[in-house]
Image (cartoon, rainbow, N blue to C red; front, side, top):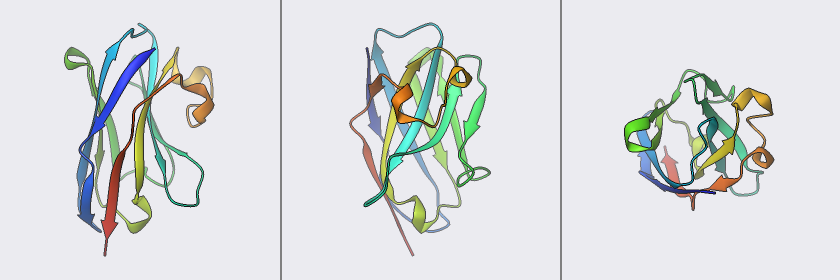
Length: 126
């Protein structure tokens, strides 16, 4: 499986911006779906965004228009650019990888992904 390491988490004020990074290594499938999930206290792990091998992007309604997922294939790095952040964005964020196309399954389901990072904490304050 692919090894994933997140970085870039921290504290930010509401309305501010933050960029998360996810470095990938190991066995990487040619066709893959990579996503970002978040886990807030007392809540289930939630799919935030995903990007397919062809660059197609998917977003949860709660972050659409505010977050942008992207990737740097040369450096095997996945990014999540978070803008106009809200208190509800406070969570531990995880990157994940799944074999095949994102739309071949439910990209927002945690059960679709075979590799996960260790998580990085994001705290939004007012």
